[in-house]
Structures are given as C-alpha cells and as structure tokens.
Image (cartoon, rainbow over all chains, first blue to last red):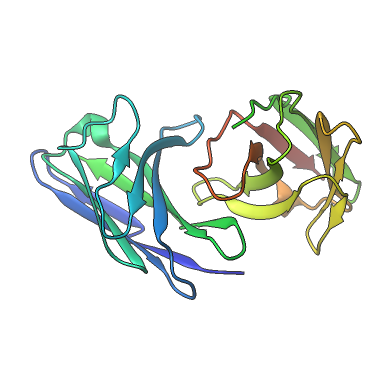
Length: 115
Length: 109
C-alpha cells in the first residue's frame, strides 16, 4: 500500500521552543493531508485539514497561531508547534488522502515531549 | 460523517476468528464503511472498506448488512499481533476521517 512518512518519530524539546513535524506522501500526490493529536488512552482528534497551496482549515478549539501548518507541495505538509508547553506533549499523526483510490494513509506518528 | 457505535473492548482466542461489530444506522447512501486499526504507539493502519457488497482482502473480510445499518469486520485467524484498537468509520471516501473510540481487541494465547 501507499506509504506516508512522518519525521521525526520522537522529539523532546524545551518549553518555549518550536518544533516542526514533517509528513510526506512517498508514492502518491496528496492535495489534502490531515493532522491529528492523540493523548494517552484516547482516540485520535482531528486538528486541521492541510490543503496544498492554500490555508489550512482548523477544527474548532485548535489555535491556528500555535499549530502552524504549511502544505507547500503535493507530497509534503508540515506542522509546527510554536512556543511549546508541557501540555502540548502528545502523539501527533498525519494522514494523506489518495484521491485516486479514495483512501487515507497514515504516518507512523510523532511522539512529542515538552520538558 | 455518520456516527458509528462499537463495543469498547473484546477478547478473542489466538487462532480463532475475531468478529468485530459496528453499528452505523444513520449512514447515507454515498458513505463507505472503513476499518482501521491502531497498534500501540503507531499510526492507524488501513484494513478494508466497502460500500454495500461484502469485501475480502489479505487481512480481513467485511460483511455489510443489506440495509447497511451495521457491519462486521472478520479477522479469520487472529494472532497476538492483531491486538489493537479497531476503528469503524463511515464517510464519503474523500473527506476527513473522524475517529470514534473504537474497539480494543485483546487476542489471548
């Protein structure tokens, strides 16, 4: 099946710093990608929809200035957690939509720990 | 997306078939039934999807009732590595995927 690569898989950062997470679709072009956050023992929560060449669409309650999304090419979307705080520690997951086959493929996730 | 309802957890003996039910009574005509699973600390993995016909692939079978209000995911010979959270999702196959709580499947030796 199609592959979506997420990098890094784990990151530890200090409070107040920013962290960038990359999501790449390796063998198909993705106009649309999605970013999720998952806290321990909870389900995935959709944060935003990333659209190539245009602004991301954020879900209610998600701060767009804190979670910056850039989708500059058909194979890459990035999520930047700005001025990170310990409560931002979470598992962040991206998915890329293969519109030809109407399937969404998920990255392996990024474990962010803010200390 | 139509709301889906799944049991919070299920057990299955290794080597036996695991049958995971899902209710989606408000599903609309253009919504597919998708199944994903998430093994601990990994991203979700696509399993199978269908519209109204039963589907089978190398991982599982999907049985959709004739009225499309419910479906069952069947893992024919469950192994310990199938222990995961299984998510049943109804959507139009091009839009954002909203996850519910899923079913936590425990496969026991």
